[in-house]
Each structure stands twice: as structure tokens, then as C-alpha cells.
Length: 408
Image (cartoon, rainbow, N blue to C red; front, side):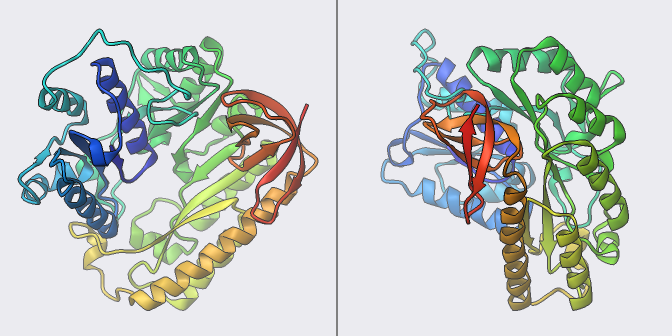
């Protein structure tokens, strides 16, 4: 199974893998596979190019496997993907992928015992994700995902509660809630804070973590709930910025200003102890001047981000941004990306140092290693096995921002 793209794609891969296992099949190396599933990504032109490369590579394997392409590129450009090789089949609906693979493999082998897992997910992740929302109603000028995913839709609270309970029964200590636009979760009049309250009250999950969220959805109620959860909601926010320049944000058709973003993040910092805030940033968006780039860089430094996921803008046909004038040359794009990546590394180390002497909860992912509430890698002074949620005191930060901790 080949996964490209976002956290939601990873969660969907876990679900497909589980469905195949329940039918009696197992995951294996691509070089031996009878069927290779490629979960595609269309977020940028570069991502689509990687998708096509992955499909071609899988199709050329010596055993000549069936290659099933699914995901956003499959939804948008099914015919062109199917034309890449005669052994490529496009299944745009991810709910149909397992069924197509099972049919290709000769039918279900149901009744075969499921293989034991060292982790709560069949793909090896110790912190399972649960998709609670899909689709997007925003129309950012650089984005085509809303065309591939459709309108926003949310899973009923009761179904999410049941999925979290199942994850806990499978030894998950932390569960990550994901969505294409997670903050706009809405079902039967209940919003994201209502969902979180239900999960805290009705499940025994040790810790909940939010995946990426839009700035406008970091409201006072969410902040208060996170602050009052005593660590059961991870003190972590991935808030999508994209640019710290208001003029660039307007060209991106984002619906907030830099000051509005800062106000919400600063309120979160003030209320939630040991909060870590990550972000996404696009550099070299069409028309981005040196002044706008510097404005964005300085804004990022002001926000004390623990990590910046840096994206060099790549032209995505089918979006409004692809038609904008003054596309930035690749050399300038690469230079700006390097500047922000260096800034991100420095800021991550500074944020790591700020946690020294504080207490936290670590979810172990390997013997003696895990991640903190703020999603920092952490080594422990005891060789605890994976899938434990343990209280620790942060003793020091290494140069690579890995934290060293003492188990309490």
C-alpha cells in the first residue's frame, strides 16, 4: 500500500488495510504484492506528479500486480491514471477499494484469524486516526481538493464514540481526530467542541489529539475545553497559516488576517499550559514580493511555532492561483523555502527548551521512546514498551529538539 498526502489519507489507508485483513489477506512488501493500492494526492502539481510516478513504479514490478489507484487524483483524473499502464485500475471511491482488491485476489478468505499486531493499526501506527469529517466548503485559490472531496460532511457523534471505544479496546492510548476541514465538524447541531466533550465523557481514551485546523475554528470554547481537559486533549494545535502577509492571504482567498490568526493563537497560548503550535506555510505564492515574504517570515517567528511545514508553491492546473500573474521563479522559491526551514528548526529547538522542567504525558511508540503532548520526540529513562501513556518530567532538550524525560 502506497500512501501520498495528508493525515486523512493515512487514516483511510488504515481502514482499507483493516478491511482486507478481515477478509483474510495481509499486507506485504510491494515487490511481492499481488495488488498494490496507491492512495493519491492532488494538493499540488508536485503531489500529482509523485502520484503518477508511484503508479508507474508499482505497475512495472516484476510480478505485474494489479495497481488500484484511489484518492483525490483518481477522483479528478481517472482516465489519465487508467492510461498509465494496462494493469492500473482506478477506484475513485475509497469505500470500494477493499472490495475491488478482494475480488482481484480471488474473493474473501473470511474466517482466517487476524494476524497479531504490535501496534493498534495494521499499518504500524501507534496513534490511530479516526476520520470524523470529509470535504471542504472553502474555496482557497490554490486548492483543488474541494473538487475532489466534495462538500463538507461529518460523522455522527455516536459513531465517532463507538470508533474511539474500538480503538481503546485495541490498546490505543491516544487517538487522533482527523478531517479535511476538521474545525467545521457539524452534525445534528453539534460542533467540534461538542464532539470532544462526548468523547471525554463517554470513552476511556487516554488522550485525544486534533489534526490540522483552520484559524477561524480556534474559538474560545475550544480553547477552554482543551485547557480544562487536564491533558486528555493534547496541548497541541496545528493551525494552518499559509502566509503571514495579509496581501498574500487575500490572493489566496483565505478568510482571516494575520492579526486575527495571531489573536486566536495568543489566547490559546495563554490558556493552555505547555501548548505547542505547528503550522503550514506556502512560500513563493504567485506575486509574493520580497517584502511580503519577509512579512510572513517575521510573523512566523512572532508566533513561536514548534514546527513549520513548508510548501513551495507549485502550479496546480484547475485552480484560480494557476492563472495569477507573476509566478515566482523556482530558484527564488527554493531560497525562500530554505530560509523558512532553517527558521523552523531554530524555533523548534527553542520551543523544546521551553518545556525543560515541566511535566507532560508521553505516549510510547517504541521501547523507551515516544511523543509528548506537543508532538515532540522524547526518550525516557526507563525501557517502557510501546502503547503506554506515562507521566514524565522533561529533563533536557537535545540539539535536534528531541526531549529527554524522567518517568514519574
